[in-house]
Image 1 (tube, one colour):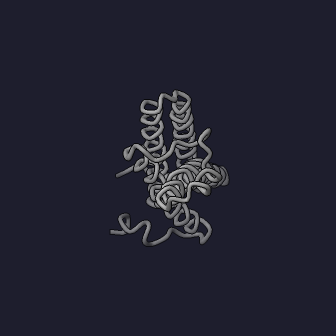
Image 2 (cartoon, helix red, strand yellow; image 1 turned 60 degrees about the vertical axis):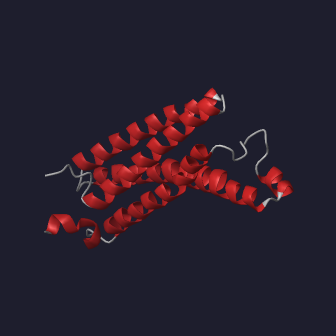
Length: 172
């Protein structure tokens, strides 16, 4: 028997796991970037990710322990807000989609003026290290996976019942 994080356990668990994967990926990405670009300030993201992961873990435990109560719903909602705000929006959409997917597309288009306007050299590294770029780009699809499971978990809560596809394993 596995630990249930909430009453919509599988979807919530997968949303939280995807958020943890996003936090681990961005930590790896920023630690690598700090090393290759001699920019130790990037390591701050690792620390922030650890704090956010601890917050998500704590909210998950509270939601589980108080499931079926008003406070359980509050902790669940707070957890989903944190998951959406940092791993999905700040990392996945801004860092992954804009800072890496869009940056690489504009760079490959060869429009130097557009690139300079969108990605000033004082703030962005031009694509040059493919490990850095691939780990940066990968943040976007991981965020989409997390978003999917957040939507499934929240939809299960709003409907007042568990989403069947998200909880198939417990019905077997």
